[in-house]
Every structure is written in C-alpha cells, then in structure tokens.
Length: 244
Length: 244
DNA sequence: AGTAACAACTTGTTTAAACAATATTGGAAA
DNA sequence: TTTCCAATATTGTTTAAACAAGTTGTTACT
Image (cartoon, rainbow over all chains, first blue to last red; front, side, top):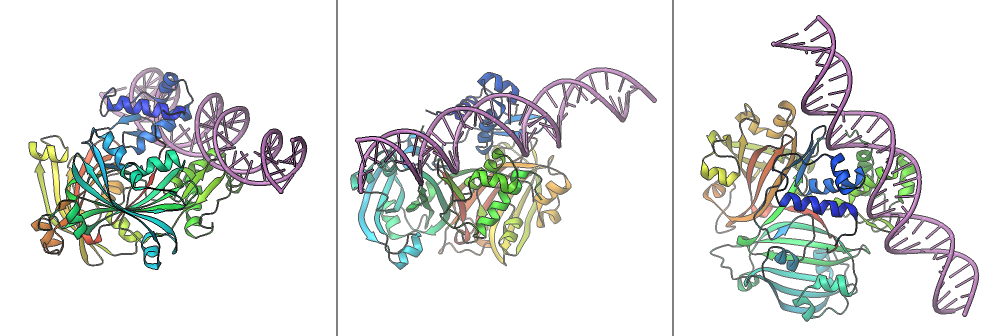
C-alpha cells in the first residue's frame, strides 16, 4: 500500500480511468477540482497527473485541460519503463508461472565474460539457466549472472521461486534500475530443445539483455532473456518532445 | 533551444555527465550546491535531476546523494520513451538516411482494416509503403496509415523526406504521444524482396507497431515498422518501483 | 453581423518554506 | 576502545503563492 499522497491520487485516478469513470477523449476534472476532492495542494495533483502522462493514460493541454486517452490493451507479458519480475507480470495477467532451474553453477569472470557482461574480470558469479513456463508453455530461457557478493547464499531452491523476492525481502537489497536492450537473434540448440521450437518454423528468438543496479550503485545482475518469438510482446508509451 | 530553466539545467548536467565531468559511480554536487550554481530554487534542480533519473543517467539515494551511473553506450538506432523520426535518429548517429516510397495510395478503412489499425470504419486514409535505408542498406520497411483529415495534401515527395517535419512545421500539428508494441513476426515476401533478406538466413523480422496521437487527442497515424533482425536494436532504462 | 477587447478558466513554470526520512559523522559516555 | 546518541547533511514530500501562457466565452463596439 502506498504511503505517499501523490501515489494514492495517482492510483485512484488510474483505477477510475481503467474503470471507465471518465469518458474516453473527454477531459478530467480540472486541477482545482481535484485539489478539493483529494484535499491536497496543486503540486501534488500535478505530480499524480504527470505519472498518468508517462503511462500514456492522459494528455495535458495547456489552457484546455487533461484528456483521457486510455484504451484498454490486450494483456501483455511485459511493460517498458518498469522492472517487473516474471512472477509479477504473470500474476498481473492471471496466468500461472512456473520456473525450472536447468543449471546452477558458480564461476569466475574471465576476460571474455567480463567484456560480455560488464562485470569486472575476476568477479565471483552465480551462473544460472532457468526456463520460465506460462500456463504450462516454456516461453523464456534465461541466462542469469549474479554477483556472489551481492546475492549471498543463492540456492537452486530460491532460483526456482523468485530471486528478486529473496534479494529484496531476505537480503533487503534495494533494486533501482535496469538498462535493457532488445534484439533479435538466431535460435540456438538450447533454445530449440527447451522452448519447444523448430528451426523450420521460427529460426529466431527475441532477446532482452539487462544490466541491473542496486541502491549501492553496483551492477549485481546481468541477464539475457531469450523469448519464444510467437509469444513475445513488449509495450511502450513514447512522448514526443519538441525539437530543440 | 529550450526556454525553461529546468530544461537548461537538465541539458547542462546531461552534457557534463556525458563529458565525464563527474566521475562514474561518484556523487554529483548536492542540491544545495546546484541551487547556487544555477541560481534557482530547489524544485527546479530536482525537476532536472528527475529527468536524468528516468534517462538512467543517475540514481538518487535519500540521505546520501545523487550518483552518476551513466555509461556510454554503443550508438543505437532507437530509444524508448521518446518519439524520434528515422531521420533524426540517423543524424544523431552520424549515419546517412534515405527513404524510398514504394507505394502511395488513398484508401477507406473497411471493417477489417478498422479492427487492425484502430481507425474508425469509413476513415479516409493515406496508405504508404516506405523503405528506409541507412548508409545504403535497406533496414526498415514501413507500412504507414495516416488520417487524411489530419495529414492534408500529403504527397510522395513529402513522404520521401520527412512526414513528421511536414506535419509539425507546415501543418503545425503537435505530435504528443505514441503507443508502441514490439513483436517478432515471420518474414513476408515483401520483406524478403526489399530488405535483401533470405528465408534460409533469418525467417523473422522485428515489428514495431505504433499508434500516434496529436494534441487534439486524435490518433492520426498507425504504422507498422518491419526491421531487419540483424540490425534491430532497442534500448530502455527501467526503474524498479517498490512493491505495493 | 462581425470583430476586437476583455474576463475567466485552464495548465505550465518558478520560488519559498517547512517538515520527514535516511545516512554519515563526531563526540560523549560506558 | 567501543558503543551510543546527537548533530548535521542529504534527498523526499507537501503546502502555498505568484506569474506566464494558452483557450474559451462574453461583452461591447463598430
């Protein structure tokens, strides 16, 4: 449950928009009205509205008002701009997640791996291969590298559930941000074997590589997620900023 | 050129970070110092810093400071969270763009197209197929649908240059936001023919579909961009928000 | 009727101030 | 020396106020 006022207002407005309480393409109540409704200052409602803008739920128009442009979208596996674990996104979409640990080892980064992952050479790492199932279908093959010094005592049991849950709630690590890249790559034999794919059908997978940082500014994770192409679906809301 | 103070501060800090004037992993000057440097209020510097956070340039730590976590990245064709035209991203990366108009027609949306694009049935549309070259290589095949009533008098000549430039600078339309989806799809004969691809090599393309809105809240464009998989590269910075 | 000016309403930017929450540091006390 | 606490420094949240800028509707005048 949120503890800040603007977060409360943001969520309330978001729910109301999703519940169609404001007509599509119509204006939301003006700031002054929201100030009275939520008994807060103008800055606070503006902060909430700002989040709705980046979510693509509304657009603001100086001199006119705030227009609802939200359209319900088909359920999607991934959203951009936020870090969400496999479990979280599955549950959000009412699907059943399962994770199988294919490999759990400890390795030391050599020069080649260091260049590839960004970890300093000599770093002690956990290297995992995990297969994520959604409603019984194997959809994502993950290659995870975790810094041992940051992810103490990781076990295959934890890896089969939620590593982030362990990091956040047991080790009390604060995960801050993640730099991600999406590309399309040729399928490998491992992909083919585990994700039930056939080269004659699709010979590519969607690949998301991410470098994730904690609140100490340390990159503690490098992950390559290989997605079955027919189930890969990424969403984004982009904002045009006036030419400079 | 920016006209607001926070935008100036944001750009100045961004440039300094890119120019390595603040050491990687070290703290930026505290807010109070920046207030003096830029002769502004605390809110204004905080607004600038907030933008750097969403850019993934810095991370803020309550009680400690603001840490520089910027790492230069290889030049990339596309960034997430902002709308950028093909020309703009090419020029930003010092590459030479060229656009060839393969098809330029006018059509009326029937039920099927309406469902596909989101335009109301009966809408008068321009339908274009355009091929984007970068440094001589055909990389992106675009299927563009523009609302005729919003993109008056579009011509093949304009389409060969920049449609957005025409919309913004001639028609004075304000482009606001764009909802985008990324997927991987099977290659088509058209893809194969124009993008110089071979089914035996890659049999997929990366597909970005976008619905773009102007400041009147009207969806005036629906575009499907089909990218050569070996050159497709999308970047993102995601922020973890505390569990609710 | 048309238009020009004005008033009212809306969002955008900036400043100022107070208090909360977290982290670090230094000194006092054990 | 070690431990604990208080002071200090830093970012986070919220309020209040003023002015700027854009839109809309009304009024008054020609």
